[in-house]
Image (cartoon, rainbow, N blue to C red; front, side):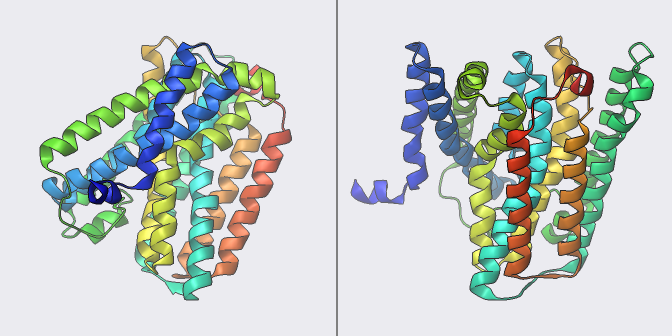
Amino acid sequence: MSGILGSIPKIYYLIVVAVAAVIARLANADPTLVFILSAIGLIPLAKLIGDATEELAVFTGPRLGGLLNATLGNAAELIITIFAIQAGLLDLVRASIIGSIIGNLLIVLGLSVFLGGWKNGIQTFDRRTASTNATLLILAVIALAIPSLFDRELVAVPNSELLFSEGVAVVIIVLYGLSVFYSFRAPTVHAAEEAGVAREAAPAHEARWSLRTTVILLIAATIGTAIVSETLVGAVEPVVESLGLTEFFLGIIIIPLIGNIAEHLVAVQVAIKNKMELSLAVSLGSSLQVALFVAPVLVFISLLFGQRLLLVFTDFELIVLFGASLIAALIALDGETNWLEGAMLIAVYLIVALAFFFLPAPTEALAH
């Protein structure tokens, strides 16, 4: 029995906290306590979704497995934002989109480069792969920024804002589909990584679970994530009032960290093992997935709940988004990294987090 328990990742034990969060909500406990328990409880559930997806890839093969990892890689955060849309917290949703991208580009990549470089010295990787991902990332950022830049001109024309956001979302999704198509046409998994869709967290390995067990765990983890996400979102407004925080800060800093922390740990761990190319595939690939898949999909999901989620962001968000993507691209293009570059990325993220902490909530005129 001890051997079985010893083989279970310790992070899974935190699922008890997820159960405690649901119980606390049913018992009408303090909303701040419910929020904290829900945030912690989502970490093992996100980890379980990632592990189950990785195990499923063993049975489906590397190409389809890469697609599954790309599609389900941000499942936890996607579920959180869907419930936020249902609750009408559109500022939080928009902020979480930007927060996910800059979080991966600054704190995840920064920690990976810093700790990997501190242990291994200068680390090298394939410049061609990094260049492709960096170029696609810059393109995605421009696509997300255009609706915001043109919004002031379109606001006077009825329904033009929503139609414009929907049109941009369609184009972005088509681009994502092309990258998936390229991954299937490519002869190797390495080429799929060039398309920005491969998100394997570890080298190929033998399946630890049977196919049936894997599917059951994936479904259970997804259902659990949905329940705890609803609990988390339900506590947002009381937490905002009691702690004096803004939905904006929660969305751009806290929610992305909660939804992606398990994946963040993977990127850092493989960088420490001197597998910098794989670490970049995780951090840059996650940013690409949010920009090219999650963001446009949320535009159409919002319509199902009678909401209007526009791809319109504040000037502050756009400045940070452009800055983060530019810095990450510059670091990736030379084919090597060192710990000082990682320290730079972390420093920028801390400055950004501090700025958004003191920034008041965006007005309806800015965020719609």
